[in-house]
Image: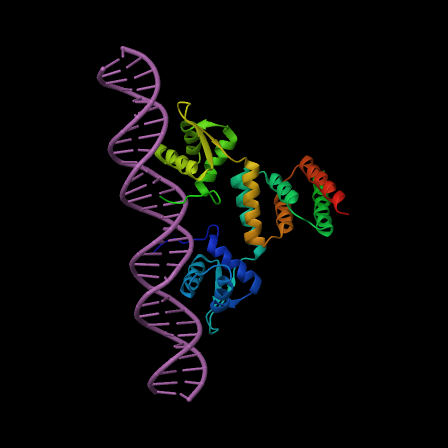
Length: 129
Length: 129
DNA sequence: TTGACATAGCGAAGACTTTCGCTAATCTTG
DNA sequence: CAAGATTAGCGAAAGTCTTCGCTATGTCAA
Protein backbone atom coordinates (compact mmCIF):
# COMPACT_ATOMS: atom_id res chain seq x y z
CA UNK A 1 0.00 0.00 0.00
CA UNK A 2 0.91 3.63 -0.32
CA UNK A 3 1.10 6.66 1.86
CA UNK A 4 -1.63 8.80 0.43
CA UNK A 5 -1.33 11.35 3.19
CA UNK A 6 -2.88 14.63 2.18
CA UNK A 7 -0.75 17.44 0.92
CA UNK A 8 -2.49 20.13 -1.08
CA UNK A 9 -5.75 19.03 -2.65
CA UNK A 10 -5.34 18.45 -6.35
CA UNK A 11 -7.34 20.13 -9.07
CA UNK A 12 -10.28 17.77 -9.18
CA UNK A 13 -10.26 17.26 -5.45
CA UNK A 14 -10.65 20.98 -5.05
CA UNK A 15 -13.53 21.07 -7.48
CA UNK A 16 -15.27 18.49 -5.37
CA UNK A 17 -14.45 20.21 -2.11
CA UNK A 18 -15.93 23.42 -3.43
CA UNK A 19 -19.12 21.64 -4.28
CA UNK A 20 -19.25 20.17 -0.80
CA UNK A 21 -18.69 23.57 0.74
CA UNK A 22 -21.60 24.93 -1.24
CA UNK A 23 -24.01 22.08 -0.85
CA UNK A 24 -23.06 20.84 2.56
CA UNK A 25 -23.01 17.10 3.27
CA UNK A 26 -24.24 15.28 0.19
CA UNK A 27 -24.46 11.89 -1.46
CA UNK A 28 -22.36 11.08 -4.50
CA UNK A 29 -25.29 11.51 -6.79
CA UNK A 30 -25.66 15.18 -5.90
CA UNK A 31 -21.99 15.88 -5.98
CA UNK A 32 -21.74 14.32 -9.37
CA UNK A 33 -24.71 16.25 -10.67
CA UNK A 34 -23.00 19.51 -9.77
CA UNK A 35 -19.70 18.35 -11.10
CA UNK A 36 -21.24 17.63 -14.45
CA UNK A 37 -22.18 21.26 -14.85
CA UNK A 38 -18.46 22.04 -15.04
CA UNK A 39 -17.01 18.95 -16.66
CA UNK A 40 -18.05 15.76 -18.39
CA UNK A 41 -16.75 12.93 -16.33
CA UNK A 42 -18.37 9.66 -15.52
CA UNK A 43 -20.22 8.88 -12.33
CA UNK A 44 -17.59 6.23 -11.66
CA UNK A 45 -14.94 8.87 -11.65
CA UNK A 46 -16.70 10.89 -9.04
CA UNK A 47 -17.08 7.85 -6.81
CA UNK A 48 -13.42 7.03 -7.24
CA UNK A 49 -12.31 10.55 -6.49
CA UNK A 50 -14.38 10.61 -3.35
CA UNK A 51 -12.87 7.35 -2.21
CA UNK A 52 -9.38 8.69 -2.78
CA UNK A 53 -10.28 11.83 -0.89
CA UNK A 54 -11.59 9.64 1.89
CA UNK A 55 -8.23 7.88 1.99
CA UNK A 56 -6.41 11.17 2.14
CA UNK A 57 -8.64 12.39 4.88
CA UNK A 58 -10.06 15.24 2.84
CA UNK A 59 -13.62 14.08 3.36
CA UNK A 60 -15.53 11.89 5.75
CA UNK A 61 -18.67 9.92 5.11
CA UNK A 62 -21.59 8.54 6.97
CA UNK A 63 -21.88 4.93 5.95
CA UNK A 64 -24.99 4.35 7.96
CA UNK A 65 -26.92 6.65 5.77
CA UNK A 66 -27.93 4.92 2.62
CA UNK A 67 -26.61 6.64 -0.15
CA UNK A 68 -23.52 7.42 1.92
CA UNK A 69 -23.27 11.03 2.82
CA UNK A 70 -19.98 12.80 2.24
CA UNK A 71 -18.82 15.93 3.96
CA UNK A 72 -15.61 17.95 3.88
CA UNK A 73 -13.25 17.56 6.81
CA UNK A 74 -11.85 21.05 6.59
CA UNK A 75 -13.76 24.25 6.16
CA UNK A 76 -13.27 26.39 3.14
CA UNK A 77 -11.52 28.86 5.38
CA UNK A 78 -9.03 26.40 6.78
CA UNK A 79 -8.28 25.00 3.38
CA UNK A 80 -7.90 28.43 1.91
CA UNK A 81 -5.58 29.34 4.72
CA UNK A 82 -3.32 26.42 3.97
CA UNK A 83 -3.27 27.11 0.31
CA UNK A 84 -2.58 30.76 0.82
CA UNK A 85 0.29 29.98 3.13
CA UNK A 86 1.63 27.61 0.57
CA UNK A 87 1.31 30.13 -2.20
CA UNK A 88 2.98 32.80 -0.13
CA UNK A 89 5.81 30.46 0.63
CA UNK A 90 6.27 29.27 -2.91
CA UNK A 91 5.89 32.49 -4.82
CA UNK A 92 6.61 35.29 -2.43
CA UNK A 93 9.17 33.57 -0.27
CA UNK A 94 7.12 34.19 2.81
CA UNK A 95 6.40 37.84 2.18
CA UNK A 96 2.69 37.73 2.81
CA UNK A 97 2.25 41.43 2.43
CA UNK A 98 3.05 41.37 -1.26
CA UNK A 99 0.18 39.05 -1.71
CA UNK A 100 -2.17 41.08 0.41
CA UNK A 101 -1.44 44.20 -1.55
CA UNK A 102 -1.86 42.37 -4.79
CA UNK A 103 -5.09 40.68 -3.90
CA UNK A 104 -6.39 43.91 -2.47
CA UNK A 105 -5.48 45.93 -5.52
CA UNK A 106 -7.04 43.28 -7.70
CA UNK A 107 -10.31 42.94 -5.92
CA UNK A 108 -13.44 44.87 -6.55
CA UNK A 109 -14.19 45.32 -2.90
CA UNK A 110 -17.27 47.06 -1.64
CA UNK A 111 -16.89 49.93 0.83
CA UNK A 112 -18.16 47.65 3.55
CA UNK A 113 -15.46 45.14 2.81
CA UNK A 114 -12.80 47.77 2.69
CA UNK A 115 -14.03 48.95 6.06
CA UNK A 116 -13.53 45.50 7.40
CA UNK A 117 -9.99 45.38 6.17
CA UNK A 118 -9.44 48.73 7.84
CA UNK A 119 -10.84 47.39 11.05
CA UNK A 120 -8.49 44.44 10.96
CA UNK A 121 -5.68 46.79 10.17
CA UNK A 122 -6.45 48.93 13.20
CA UNK A 123 -6.43 45.84 15.27
CA UNK A 124 -3.08 44.70 14.00
CA UNK A 125 -1.52 48.11 14.43
CA UNK A 126 -2.83 48.36 17.89
CA UNK A 127 -0.88 45.32 18.99
CA UNK A 128 2.84 45.71 18.37
CA UNK A 129 3.42 49.46 18.63
CA UNK B 1 4.23 16.33 -30.44
CA UNK B 2 2.12 17.67 -27.63
CA UNK B 3 0.46 20.90 -26.70
CA UNK B 4 2.43 21.95 -23.68
CA UNK B 5 0.83 25.34 -23.44
CA UNK B 6 1.39 26.92 -20.07
CA UNK B 7 -1.25 26.81 -17.41
CA UNK B 8 -0.12 27.28 -13.84
CA UNK B 9 3.53 26.57 -13.24
CA UNK B 10 3.98 23.25 -11.51
CA UNK B 11 5.79 22.68 -8.26
CA UNK B 12 9.31 22.33 -9.60
CA UNK B 13 8.77 24.95 -12.24
CA UNK B 14 7.88 27.35 -9.52
CA UNK B 15 10.98 26.49 -7.54
CA UNK B 16 13.03 27.32 -10.58
CA UNK B 17 11.14 30.49 -11.34
CA UNK B 18 11.71 31.67 -7.81
CA UNK B 19 15.41 31.14 -8.21
CA UNK B 20 15.38 33.08 -11.45
CA UNK B 21 13.48 35.92 -9.80
CA UNK B 22 16.12 36.07 -7.10
CA UNK B 23 19.21 35.65 -9.21
CA UNK B 24 18.10 37.32 -12.38
CA UNK B 25 19.11 35.86 -15.76
CA UNK B 26 21.39 32.90 -15.13
CA UNK B 27 22.99 29.89 -16.76
CA UNK B 28 21.81 26.41 -15.86
CA UNK B 29 24.83 25.84 -13.70
CA UNK B 30 23.85 28.62 -11.30
CA UNK B 31 20.23 27.70 -11.25
CA UNK B 32 21.10 24.16 -10.46
CA UNK B 33 23.49 25.18 -7.71
CA UNK B 34 20.69 27.04 -5.95
CA UNK B 35 18.23 24.29 -6.55
CA UNK B 36 20.51 21.83 -4.85
CA UNK B 37 20.30 23.76 -1.63
CA UNK B 38 16.62 22.80 -1.45
CA UNK B 39 16.54 19.39 -3.11
CA UNK B 40 18.85 16.72 -4.41
CA UNK B 41 18.18 16.34 -8.06
CA UNK B 42 20.60 15.79 -10.86
CA UNK B 43 21.96 18.46 -13.15
CA UNK B 44 20.23 16.66 -16.02
CA UNK B 45 16.93 17.19 -14.34
CA UNK B 46 17.44 20.91 -14.10
CA UNK B 47 18.36 21.11 -17.77
CA UNK B 48 15.28 19.12 -18.69
CA UNK B 49 13.00 21.23 -16.57
CA UNK B 50 14.34 24.38 -18.12
CA UNK B 51 13.77 23.01 -21.57
CA UNK B 52 10.20 22.14 -20.70
CA UNK B 53 9.71 25.58 -19.27
CA UNK B 54 11.11 26.99 -22.47
CA UNK B 55 8.50 25.02 -24.40
CA UNK B 56 5.75 26.30 -22.18
CA UNK B 57 6.96 29.83 -22.55
CA UNK B 58 7.73 30.25 -18.88
CA UNK B 59 11.32 31.19 -19.58
CA UNK B 60 13.37 32.50 -22.47
CA UNK B 61 17.02 32.00 -23.15
CA UNK B 62 19.86 33.66 -24.91
CA UNK B 63 21.45 31.01 -27.08
CA UNK B 64 24.17 33.30 -28.28
CA UNK B 65 25.64 33.46 -24.87
CA UNK B 66 27.67 30.40 -24.17
CA UNK B 67 26.38 28.82 -21.31
CA UNK B 68 22.90 29.79 -22.43
CA UNK B 69 21.36 32.36 -20.19
CA UNK B 70 17.84 31.75 -18.95
CA UNK B 71 15.46 34.36 -17.70
CA UNK B 72 11.85 34.33 -16.56
CA UNK B 73 9.27 35.61 -19.01
CA UNK B 74 6.89 36.84 -16.33
CA UNK B 75 7.74 38.83 -13.26
CA UNK B 76 7.13 37.44 -9.83
CA UNK B 77 4.31 39.94 -9.51
CA UNK B 78 2.53 38.89 -12.68
CA UNK B 79 2.89 35.24 -11.85
CA UNK B 80 1.71 35.78 -8.32
CA UNK B 81 -1.22 37.72 -9.66
CA UNK B 82 -2.26 34.85 -11.86
CA UNK B 83 -1.88 32.31 -9.13
CA UNK B 84 -3.79 34.41 -6.67
CA UNK B 85 -6.61 34.88 -9.14
CA UNK B 86 -6.66 31.19 -9.72
CA UNK B 87 -6.70 30.43 -6.03
CA UNK B 88 -9.45 32.93 -5.41
CA UNK B 89 -11.43 31.39 -8.20
CA UNK B 90 -10.90 27.83 -7.13
CA UNK B 91 -11.29 28.15 -3.41
CA UNK B 92 -13.24 31.28 -2.73
CA UNK B 93 -15.41 31.33 -5.79
CA UNK B 94 -14.19 34.75 -6.69
CA UNK B 95 -14.53 36.39 -3.29
CA UNK B 96 -11.14 38.03 -3.15
CA UNK B 97 -11.77 39.80 0.10
CA UNK B 98 -11.87 36.60 2.07
CA UNK B 99 -8.41 35.89 0.92
CA UNK B 100 -7.14 39.35 1.68
CA UNK B 101 -8.44 39.17 5.20
CA UNK B 102 -7.00 35.77 5.66
CA UNK B 103 -3.58 36.58 4.31
CA UNK B 104 -3.54 39.77 6.31
CA UNK B 105 -4.50 38.09 9.53
CA UNK B 106 -1.91 35.44 8.87
CA UNK B 107 1.00 37.71 8.15
CA UNK B 108 3.54 39.08 10.56
CA UNK B 109 3.57 42.46 8.96
CA UNK B 110 5.79 45.29 10.07
CA UNK B 111 4.22 48.66 10.91
CA UNK B 112 5.66 50.03 7.70
CA UNK B 113 3.95 47.35 5.69
CA UNK B 114 0.68 47.85 7.46
CA UNK B 115 0.99 51.52 6.69
CA UNK B 116 1.31 50.69 3.05
CA UNK B 117 -1.80 48.60 3.10
CA UNK B 118 -3.54 51.52 4.74
CA UNK B 119 -2.35 53.82 2.04
CA UNK B 120 -3.70 51.53 -0.64
CA UNK B 121 -6.91 51.29 1.31
CA UNK B 122 -7.28 55.06 1.40
CA UNK B 123 -6.76 55.15 -2.28
CA UNK B 124 -9.38 52.52 -2.96
CA UNK B 125 -11.91 54.15 -0.68
CA UNK B 126 -11.27 57.50 -2.29
CA UNK B 127 -12.48 56.21 -5.64
CA UNK B 128 -15.97 54.80 -5.51
CA UNK B 129 -17.65 56.71 -2.69
C1' DT C 1 44.30 18.45 -33.26
C1' DT C 2 43.05 16.06 -29.35
C1' DG C 3 41.98 14.93 -24.66
C1' DA C 4 39.45 16.58 -20.75
C1' DC C 5 35.72 18.91 -19.12
C1' DA C 6 31.46 21.66 -19.32
C1' DT C 7 26.97 22.08 -21.50
C1' DA C 8 22.75 20.54 -24.10
C1' DG C 9 19.29 17.23 -25.35
C1' DC C 10 16.68 12.79 -26.01
C1' DG C 11 13.95 9.27 -24.62
C1' DA C 12 12.37 6.33 -21.34
C1' DA C 13 11.31 5.12 -16.38
C1' DG C 14 8.82 6.14 -12.13
C1' DA C 15 5.42 8.58 -9.50
C1' DC C 16 1.10 10.63 -9.08
C1' DT C 17 -3.55 12.09 -10.84
C1' DT C 18 -7.61 11.32 -13.35
C1' DT C 19 -10.55 8.48 -15.95
C1' DC C 20 -13.69 4.61 -16.57
C1' DG C 21 -15.31 -0.37 -17.69
C1' DC C 22 -16.97 -3.90 -15.31
C1' DT C 23 -18.37 -6.38 -11.16
C1' DA C 24 -20.53 -6.49 -6.56
C1' DA C 25 -23.66 -5.01 -3.21
C1' DT C 26 -27.91 -2.74 -1.95
C1' DC C 27 -32.54 -0.96 -2.74
C1' DT C 28 -37.08 -0.69 -4.76
C1' DT C 29 -41.37 -2.35 -6.35
C1' DG C 30 -44.58 -5.61 -8.44
C1' DC D 1 -38.82 -13.02 -3.50
C1' DA D 2 -37.17 -11.61 -8.36
C1' DA D 3 -36.03 -8.13 -11.92
C1' DG D 4 -34.40 -3.80 -12.63
C1' DA D 5 -32.37 0.30 -10.95
C1' DT D 6 -29.16 2.62 -7.92
C1' DT D 7 -24.92 2.81 -5.42
C1' DA D 8 -20.17 1.19 -4.24
C1' DG D 9 -15.67 -0.42 -5.45
C1' DC D 10 -11.61 -2.51 -7.95
C1' DG D 11 -8.06 -2.51 -11.01
C1' DA D 12 -6.11 -1.07 -14.98
C1' DA D 13 -5.33 2.58 -18.63
C1' DA D 14 -4.24 7.28 -19.98
C1' DG D 15 -2.31 11.64 -18.95
C1' DT D 16 1.11 14.66 -16.42
C1' DC D 17 5.09 15.72 -13.97
C1' DT D 18 9.64 14.68 -12.42
C1' DT D 19 13.75 12.24 -12.69
C1' DC D 20 17.97 10.72 -14.85
C1' DG D 21 21.22 7.70 -17.87
C1' DC D 22 23.46 8.21 -21.82
C1' DT D 23 24.76 10.54 -26.03
C1' DA D 24 26.03 14.65 -28.55
C1' DT D 25 27.93 19.01 -28.87
C1' DG D 26 30.90 22.74 -27.62
C1' DT D 27 35.13 24.90 -25.32
C1' DC D 28 39.78 25.29 -24.07
C1' DA D 29 44.46 24.27 -23.09
C1' DA D 30 48.57 21.59 -24.13
